[in-house]
Length: 88
Image 1 (spheres, one colour):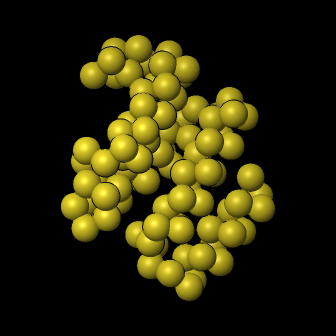
Image 2 (cartoon, rainbow, N blue to C red; image 1 turned 135 degrees about the horizontal axis):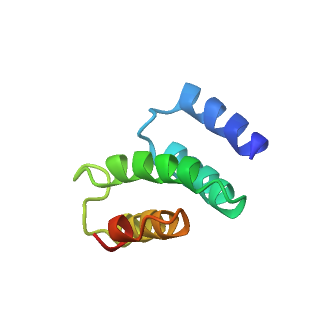
């Protein structure tokens, strides 16, 4: 996780924060947090990625990657015990 955060910081200096590579790294950070059991922190990262992905100029709301991120958000909500939000 620490190494991914370092990569993220370096990418953000070179590329726009909404760039594809920065977004991908942030997605990987979210996955590490999820795997470590920190579902709330993972949720925040996935939501940040989703906000970028949903933009039509990036991927759009129905792109497969955007839908995958939504599924990850639902999984984090479920794991954190927020079953109603996961189903919404």
